[in-house]
Image (cartoon, helix red, strand yellow):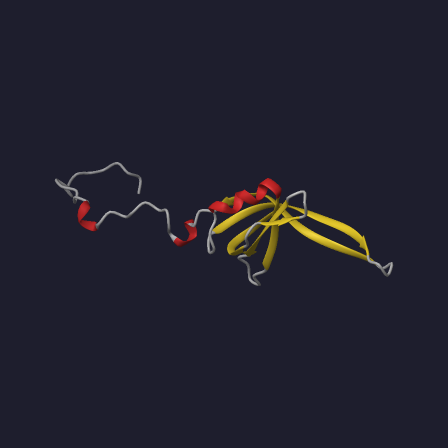
Length: 125
């Protein structure tokens, strides 16, 4: 699965326990009629993937949905879901005209010369 949108927030890397488990969260705001703020976590060595991204940047993140069951001390069963990222890539902002080649000024073009309107062309239209 993939999530696309603009980066709203990138958290700091968090380390848990004596085994050094690492987690880092990113929030992406989707570009749709009703935008959603989706929190995605990257774990272990994948936390470093977020180092080169900034708030406001358009991204596409490949994710896996994870679910787990937990029984609390009162014996009640609870279920938790997480969205875990494993790849992120920047999207081009082509819709806004960025990264487009510049348009040359009008005076950069030379008018066609030596046009003789009396000459017949063989174009069918």
